[in-house]
Length: 232
Image (cartoon, rainbow, N blue to C red; front, top):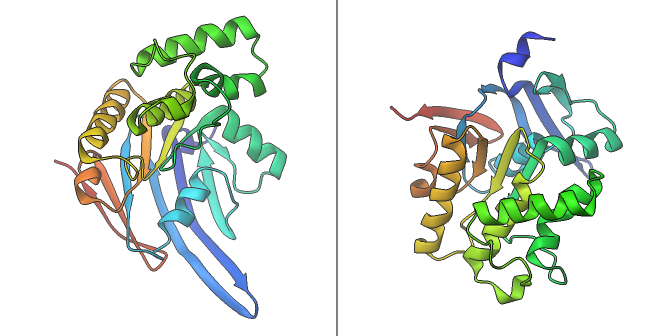
């Protein structure tokens, strides 16, 4: 056990450099911060600021060029691809702007997808999918396909799928970007309820009114942390 176990996330002097031909592009310039369990954070910044690169690092979709990243006390900075894949499957839930549902599958089958890779039996998967569909208000839509649902309903399916493996953190990339304002507010209310029940949520958004739902706002500029604001 390490001191980093006090946080669900601890980032220490993280950099990310991309080689573009003969040019080096420094997407992250050495950032450090920590997130407590049960935190609710919004990552903000202009286009090209490094916020998407940071989200990829937090989601273990990429490795940093240098620096360290502890997730639940484990240093995941230098894990190999298979190990990172296992971390993503077991500890991280993803919510995307475009929902990323499989159109040929039903609501139930989309929610069950992580459980299939975790080795759950069909019976266990069905029960958990029903439970999480009910939780997001879609208990009666289990046999529908995504094309038969509204945008807000599809995002609710995506949230249920992200939660079904009981992840340590929930990462949301512009979760309301494809929704009208009323539906977007409903999704934000659902995320707020999840956070009040103890789920750690980190979202990327360019909308200040969406970021206001979070308790902390981390502003990124030119690959560095510009400032961190905490709601009073």
